[in-house]
Length: 187
Image (cartoon, rainbow, N blue to C red; front, side):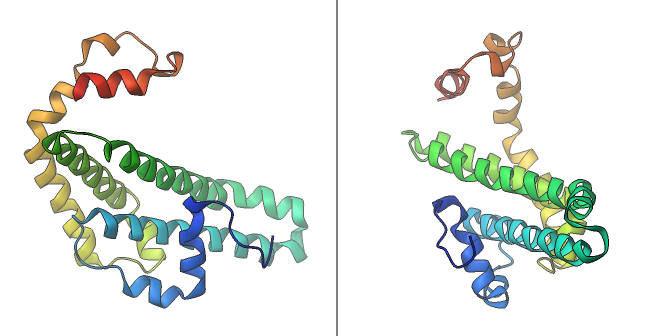
């Protein structure tokens, strides 16, 4: 794998991050309502955790062996890294999906919902963002303010989305067309 180009477009940010970490971090702005900035920030944390995980394993292999180092990295390193990769993948897929919405007002609401979600996730992962030296205390406080303001702003849109009756008694995973049916009901 070393020296070979990344094959997945979804992972290109890793290459950007590792080619110049300082340059990557400089591009993070204080605008925590800008979706591109938020994604850049979140992907920076994901890259940081992939590096942190690899370093943990590498440092512990000489004393513990590969298998034990791997096992000990699971709960606090690989688990977090996997969740972050999944969230980044979801955010990208969500944006691709809503880019096809025809109604600009609906599209704007769904973008704001994603911005709300990412700001909330950042507040929940505040320690991890601080560990990665990606956010200041002021920026974390701004995320909290954004969550409160966006929740107020979107309250009339969010409440009906939680009350879609057709899906109330269904397990989403039991319906392969769940996402399309859901999007059809809200657009």
